[in-house]
Length: 348
Image (cartoon, rainbow, N blue to C red; front, top):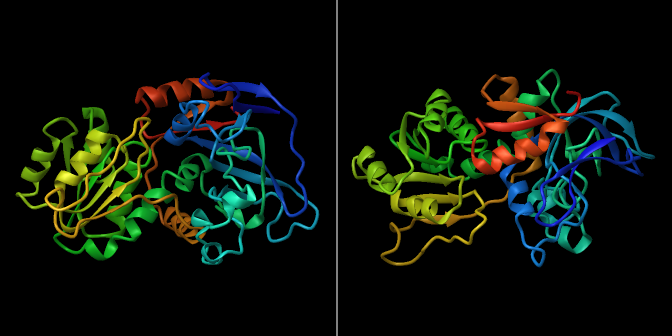
């Protein structure tokens, strides 16, 4: 079968032919119908050799949708031909966090060598993939897999980040979204669906700000050296109640901290290829501003997102690519020229 693999440190990913996998006990074989491409992949592939821990060759793709093709011995709980998406942050299933469905915070994954697909385990950028347990599959019914697969990370990560701050998003509140690409344009829609907050979006081009407006942002501001001052001006001098940074570079983190209001939440979601950090302490931030770095989301939250998708909440902007075009999609991801989320469709 064909797969997209990262094979050499510092080199571009390659489309290769590898053996079709066979599911073992308790496992599920999926015929992949769609696979998302993410900035996390780019981050991993830019790590130097002394920091790279994901194994080679690595079949990429931690956003996966597919149809159940085969069940391993003893596997129950899912039927052949069921259309599903894959919950990516696999855990042990039994620790305190996993018992709550929070496998993204599994306390034993590292100890047991459990890795997410595409981030250690073979991922979804292939014609077939192995899923280690049916509990990591969420049926999607008649939803379009291309439009739905980004919800497994680009939707789940901001959904998890936003849910924890919903008590602060009352009438008259403001949420600032920095970066309106794959995650950010979905965050805007989640904010509009779940809260009465005024949503203000920042990005570096007018085209990306146009996308933010199209999916529901009330106001947009160009993300430049004057961004913090312009956001404060747009807010009438008051700070925001929630700031979501989907870039995670030093300039955007600085902007996030500068526009956060008293008793606000600042949530840094993006991962920059260069070290970056928020400056926290007296006279460095608004009083009682909380700064956090979340990771992905829970299984229950992915189920909630799929329910919202069935209600027609999301307008997921995607660009589709054939398997052979996946390296080009990664080039465009790194160059910042994608509109929304890149999705590879193996059948093309």
